[in-house]
Length: 172
Image 1 (cartoon, rainbow, N blue to C red):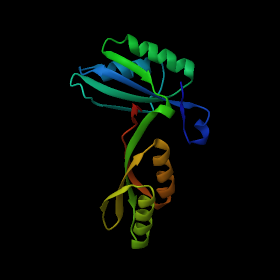
Image 2 (spheres, one colour; image 1 turned 180 degrees about the vertical axis):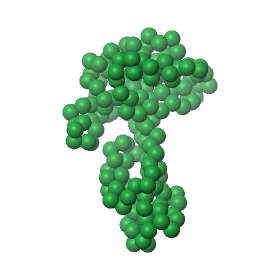
Image 3 (cartoon, one colour; image 1 turned 45 degrees about the vertical axis):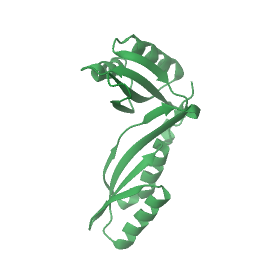
């Protein structure tokens, strides 16, 4: 098992694991899975759920910070849930994982707007909206890339931000 390590200094030694699971499209599945984490006092860093190529199944991607032993235990417990078809811990080296973020920042002056547009270009982000006093940027990439962009533009004043959480698939 390989883990992704977060950028934040206080969390450097705590690995972030990506769990990918196929679950049945039934009411209550998301609750049962998140309740399993809650009951064992584990935090979910991000969770995404969406349809797959199979209409009766959804793919759930969960990121959690923990140690390998605890993650192994979580996987075993998730596999016992009746609506869970498959659970895999994804290996960073053999996985494509991305997150999307929408970030609205203060941009009152034209030179500041241009700086933000230049940063967005460098990060291959899209400017979705420009108003008199703010600018809205969409950025897609690894959580580290999004964190780097956010840290770069924080001093302009982030008005609002929404992040999707990680979506991931194994390579090959």
